[in-house]
Length: 192
Image (cartoon, rainbow, N blue to C red; front, side, top):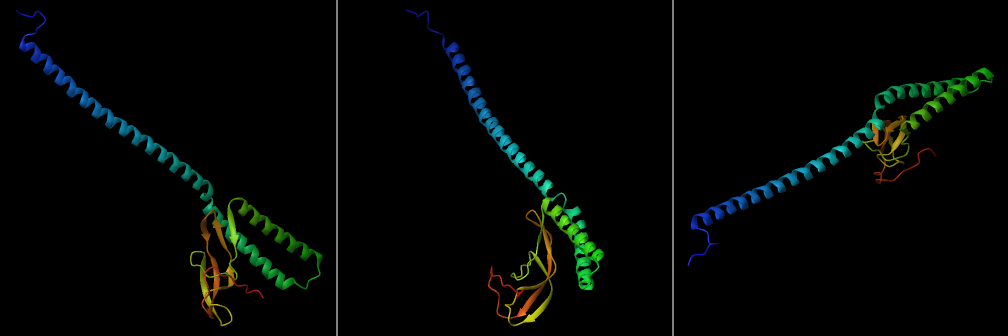
């Protein structure tokens, strides 16, 4: 008896071979799918990192883009302060109302200039009496004084400026020498 539904062995072999090829193609396709999914996820992560980096760079450009201009303006502020200091020493006893008005006008102009700088993220700092910090201060000379701890800012020759969190210009200072070592973080008032 022969079974009509029975396939000859060659046909079974052909079907089995075709099935094996399909299984192999499925495995390859699944591997490609996993690889492509990995590439897509990596690309998305790279795009997110690029977006964050670009946002940070744009923020930095807004904050620090005026640094060169601000440095140029600082020399004007310094000169105004020097002019005020010199004029106040020379004209302190003057009763001439015109001279007093002129000095007041220059003082107002200096205050407005400093306000404009601060409005644009440039902040002035005066480290008088603070511990010397080479990241913020530039020591110009040492002052021997046994009554003040060593390493303290005794005199500010030129104030420093920050723009955002970055140093725009360090403060030029005179540092104490000769007393006990200053305790980190401690401040001493030397204006007394």
